[in-house]
Length: 263
Image (cartoon, rainbow, N blue to C red; front, side, top):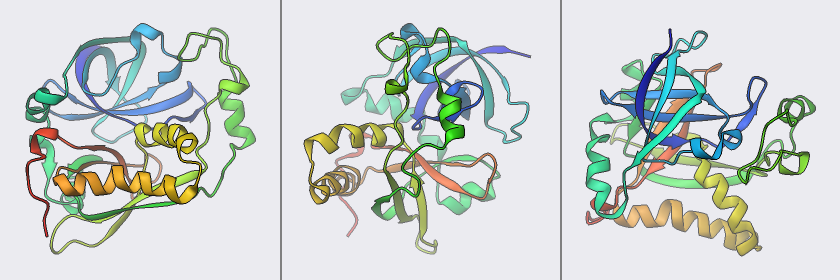
């Protein structure tokens, strides 16, 4: 049964090839009851322009419990029904944003697992960013077939998709190494936030020297939030291999930036 509900978008992952929707983005959101929800699949780059939403924006959409995905938080979306609504601003609006998600924070990754959840929000400690060459730098033929243009699909500018505008596979893989409590083990999770992929595609032109490019990522995604002590990770696990977890997004509430970094 489809039902129309409202969600505040918190995370968009980098797109992946999809047999059903050409490309698929996993979106994490919080519903009006304050519960974390996974909305999947959403073919974001081929949505109508009026349906494309941002992080920290409320959307309304028809959803139903995902029939094949037994994870509690997973819902299938009728993406033709997506209606972007009001945005929550940054700056002075951070306190309002944080009021809607602060209750989601778990004390550690182990606590997320013990709760039986497949999504979670934690505050990492001692985190670093590892950037390495991707194991596969080109799409497989099967993945290319999934992404081939289909009638009526367009890119972000409303132009018909062609092989030249197909999704780029990032040549690198980024991973966060972190712990999250005094007695917690160290974790090594892939970082799959859409924003970090977009940063790579933009910054590699600005910083052609690999060492400089890597330093720019470390500065933005490690040094700056460490100095402000305002880094939080959204975690999610893999549908087919649910023992594998990823950092699917990161959030740095600016109204918490006055805190002194731990020594």
